Length: 101
Image (tube, rainbow, N blue to C red; front, top):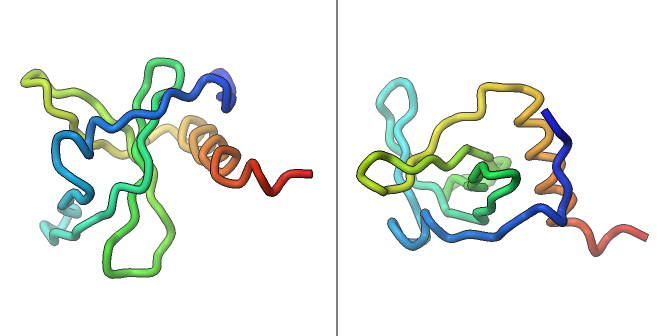
């Protein structure tokens, strides 16, 4: 996969437009949790969302945003390790770009 750069990012709001500032997700055991939508962006034609579980002080999660056949955004895990690493590093770069000297 090609490395992403901050100049390729397009900020979006598909999830927030469709669902508001939070989404409820179910884990593989059927347990539902509410996540705050921190950021949404596209890079190289793929959409991504950064989420944080509302009531916990855990790390943020990055998921891929897809559009369902009925036009609503859906979330899926990023299974490819290289893609996840590229997107994670890109989000860090976008978030902490002012810290660089």
